[in-house]
Amino acid sequence: MKDTQRILVTGAGGQLGQELVRTLMAVFGEDRIVASDIDRTKGIHFTQCAFEPLNVFSTEHMETIIQHYNIKQVYHLAAILSALGEKDPTSTWQVNLDGLLAVLATAQKMEVERVFWPSSIAVFGTNSPLDNTPQYALRDARTVYGIAKVAGELWCQYYFERYGLDVRCLRYPGLIGYRSLPGGGTTDYAVDIYHHAVKGENFTCYLGPDTRLPMLYMPDAIKAALQLMKAPREKIKVRPGYNIQGMSFTPAEALRSIQRFYPEFRVEYAPDQRQLIADGWPKAVDDEMAFNDWGWEPKYDLDFMTEDMLTHLMEKGVES
Ligand code: SER
Image 1 (cartoon, rainbow, N blue to C red):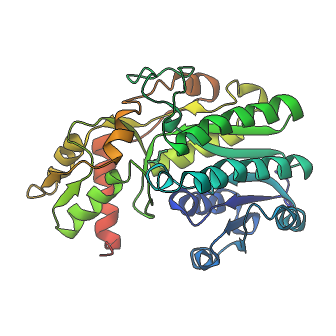
Image 2: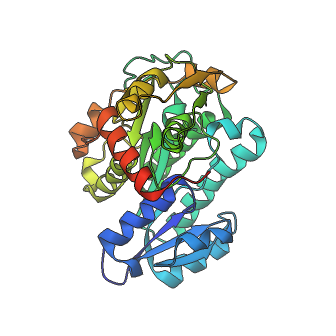
């Protein structure tokens, strides 16, 4: 990217956005990043870079921002997560799918060079092979969040093939980080469990002890996005969204990993409706194509992540 060009992040106030903006500022410089969120109060997180309150449905406003800052890359993260999405399927579809379409159309019109969009393991479902799910397995999504991700993947592919818009996608598994909290996802327990351990409180897990899901530690999730966006265009052979993961574990395994540092820590299990969603998701995904095409390689496994999470949460202090 040239010196005058900038990167826009939508939904920057969310779990992934806050961490992504931090890394983008470190890599490209604070003056090169524009954080945006529909919620203007999220601006408090972005004192070092530009912040614009933005509803992506206000496409004229988005165009003005793109023009004003000379935006050449967009990371479109604004979305509602899986469990929360089930409470209001219509508005989730609108935010997650129509929001993506607004961004794709604006990016194409304004000649943005690259767009990043996170897809999810939620594209898979009951009739997909759930063990080591292949890249091109049946996308049998059963949540509105997952259905919007399937449709979104196809739209991203369409924009690439029809208009040449260079949109790149990753199918994120559960994301775990110590700096920001998820809200309304099916994999949120994997963040909350660490907070409880550090606070010295026992944890009630809404998934059963043996529910295996693919996960990714935040530094690896951010690294993957940047690596994908940096790769030469011809290397990106999968447009709908690359399978990626860093590890795959169950709540019982997470507990054991934490008990190495907090032997007294205990978890009770009280599965709720999120169990049904998790049961339809892959236990692990095959991410070989990401490795082959652009060199994807995670650094953190469960125990390495546990050590890092607990160290940082202890240093930073956990809000109650
Ligand atoms: N972490 C997401 C969720 O639980 C899945 O992409 O909704």
